[in-house]
Length: 531
Image (cartoon, rainbow, N blue to C red; front, top):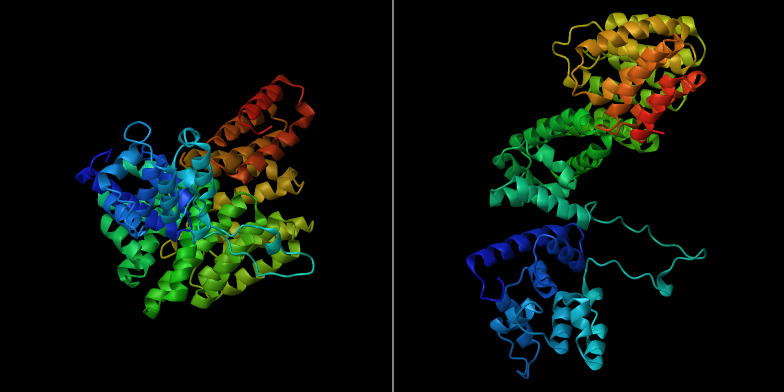
């Protein structure tokens, strides 16, 4: 495309830019933002970038410029436009008047169409023309300027300003384009991935989307565009994405995954509100939405952002109630109870424990019993009723040994070891460490022996709790060793709960802060950005 009539390669570039621009406009990007995105993947002049952003051929632009001058004095030719677009490396400099005309066509400022160095090469009169030609207010995606007349005062009211259409900004678009360009050679699939990733969270969504086949990507894009109805295959695709997101949690951590999961559940929510579909398909899609809401709530909980966690968990509970699935309803109540436990809201924990127990009686699942018993155990411990807490915990342990055949996948994490570690951690946190030391040490050792290294958060939490128990037992060198291992895992996972557990474990080591062991630990913590 450099200074010559459009070649096959040049037309391919134009078509690709036109496709990207269409998707970005739908996400609320201005023409200036789209040109900035294209600038990082196309090394051409600003004048050409804006033409690419608008998806116009040189012939289109020439015709529009000449039509804008009925007297026929413009007489712009394609070859001359290419020369202008090649300036200053080659070609010739465009006139100030032409820049003003093009700025209006491209809905931008004339100064944006050339570099600052080129602007400085014009005469003073021409610079006035260029600086005065600002048509950015014509851009429908440009937010209105906040002048004095539009301000809201104490004596006036205004509707809430809608949030931006897109959570994907220009730098994120560049990362997305580069990631797709490097890893995908098929042009058709590249376009599909770009379109889908814009809807589902940007470059962070690519790992999940790569699990789909080309046919599944086409179907998903069609459903999201409203050109394809929600059918059996489309629901299967959403279920597959949900499963991929759950599996990605331990690899990527909540900070990376949460925005993607939120965008996916928003997309499913729009379909549920928009589409009429068979009841069986609606129920499956509603179940997918509930499980993705639970995952979003858990990820926010793992970041210790409790306010952000409560909303998706409540959304998931409403969806589960709408679906009428007692197992899913009970599971949502369990996680709302866990959230309340970390916020020291004991009465609320008991409410959710009772709700889990009630719905468990209507569910075929046997793995719901250890969930409500473990919530009761935590609540009783917080009230200082150690005996009742131990009894509830023992009941949870016995029931957690139930077979997992015919149980939903989201309950498969329940096991005696998992409950034992959770119980011991609660006792240590609630300053009842005495009875917890022996069981937590044995449970941690058994748990770590069989734990897959890919589960980084779980691995780190077990190590931190292990270190706390060892500190209570005054096994300081061993406690420091376990805590150092846990700290290293924070480089690979963004769990704020893991960071918090490490901080709590280090606080318990304060009486030994002057020892060589703890001093070395502090150096390791600082290297990991933890102190």
